[in-house]
Length: 159
Image (cartoon, rainbow, N blue to C red):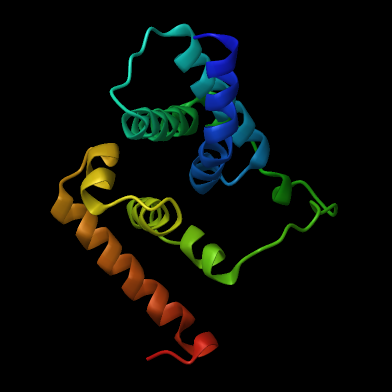
């Protein structure tokens, strides 16, 4: 890859990679590490993509795999979160109540809903990225929406 291509890929996909990794890891600093890992894998490998969609799908799948690998690592399993350390709180960030509820969903539901509604992927594309069947992804979406509907019903006057 030449410098121009590297700059294009980083500019175009870094925020998406960070959002997906935050969805998995819930820590912004870990997301930066995952972003760096994904780009290093892309830059050091000899990958040829058929289209920009193929490139984006590869980056999403690689990000998800890197997050799963990170969660299995000794560093992740043997560290303590900042919220358990004491009195000092991290600075508050802008929060969306709906996004906060999505973060509380079980892993597969959360991933499917995020990729579908926030990244705009179809169920078939999500199934390919997650390594699941299309029917499973459809169930994740339906069940996740049901949980969200029940959770947010009072706040938004839904039934």
